Image (cartoon, rainbow, N blue to C red; front, side):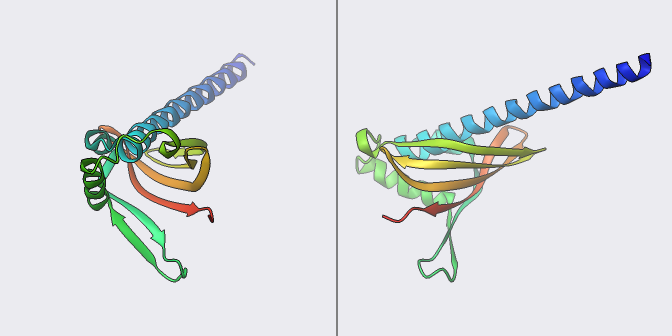
Length: 152
């Protein structure tokens, strides 16, 4: 009987530790997305924040308006656009141009994860984003994004 109680206690402790570890990973992922994507890429045009949380092989994937093919925007090209907009005075964004997000889910399995969130410009919900991440030696990095854009 003591062995059964010990085993149940051990299973319960293991489950609690795994759940806490998963919550820690989800928090780390949310922080990376908030810092690199929302602050760095969208609101501030801060290339160092972008580089800290977005892998150099990251791609934004979209579907053409006619729904027949996919287009790809590598992060290097996206960063170049950000750099030019920052030089033109488009950053930092403020007021009704400020981007914010609301996390809907963060699913973590080992060293891979997918985050789903609503993307707002000001108070207007514009997109639902799906970002894939891998955990590297130096932490979580975004590796790809697909999205749904709400009709105007």
